[in-house]
Image (tube, rainbow over all chains, first blue to last red; front, side, top):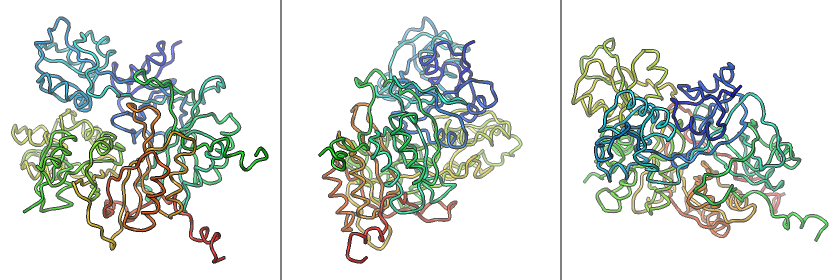
Length: 302
Length: 302
């Protein structure tokens, strides 16, 4: 039986496209809000859900991290989707006929130079896939929409132009969330995501990061955040290379538990390949591990 | 002569409201895109501009930081605005008449529980203030808009309900940017914002943060970011307490210059008070300064 994976938006949303790129067999379940994704999994309506956590242009999705903190789902995989905006119209439209372009304001602004160059009138819509669905239902040869390739396919629209975004480095990173931990595969590069809070004392973060430095662990994301509902408390979102099943990662997490006010494991999962416009498969902050040579200074080998 | 301060959006946008809260005498200049703000200042059309850099719900505005990196304006002040959404309608409307509510999708989603409770039909618009302007120009007693108090005032709309956002902890932080540095005032708490890149070597970030730890400087924001157009290079946005005119800050910045791949000063400015829903005036990461007692261990005092 195919897995049911929930996503926010309508069929044809970029999240829907990301699920199908990750698991072509999955059945995708649209939900209205981010919080509904968590509920769908917890209530057994879905086996997993796909939550956007950061976009290379818009930045970290703060709301997603708040929801991760408030629930107990586990990150089972990360999915990175290159966001490629398509100009879609009803079949047999000639591109010269187009006068208006409809989409979510964020998609419109990401294609702003393109729209300006063509002299189209931009019109706001609630979401990208929804504007494709509406255009298909109410055909208008002078209106195009900006949405995913999948939305075009699902609603029978024609692709007038591909990749119309002004900035080609547009990708969204998602977490695939489920109730259980992903099985550990030692043969692939793994990543671990946690949230921790520092204690209310000087040098607290510096001490927390020391656990990772001593264990030569590469961090791949570090972000401070204060919750306005909890003034004076700082939270850190941290992604790093490695898996808690590896002894040096377990050691770092144990040290962190002793230094931090609290630590919440979000999950450990295989690292996703980067989108195809980069030529490197993964990248790390290169900030934490002490060099091996340096470590040896304190040992017997020098 | 009043200062001209550019902002993104239409008159009545939250940015416009933030400028007026910061400098009630200023003349505000609407611009279409974020990049136009920088141009307005560099071309002398505005004395300064106000750029949103983070929102407590949506997170860091990644695009703003990219623009700060690519231009040479200086942060002269930070402005923190509590975002309070108003339900606005044409004058003499009775709240029972309202059937539809129009706004930017982000504002609609921030008031989603309210809209659902009332059973209104949500309609997407390009921005909040623009939907207020359009409603005033094309009056419809069954339609309300979600926008700022200022938009209601400017376009002669009536406030049907205040503070309709689902999450009361909604604030946006802005940078006021100009060509020159703000004058140093040693009598107020100051903050400094920088961007730096780490070198491609192990423990690079750990080394960079050491400069701040040794100088007992509190960090208030730390965020890693990889630029997909520059794979393998990591950037950090860092805000900390203090001013480069203070010797211990100058020392930390000098150490950082030696450790980092590059450092870009964004500016030093008086710290803004937090919005009124918190009872603390500022908060810090409490992570970097070593405790005084600890420092004394290496001195002559113990």
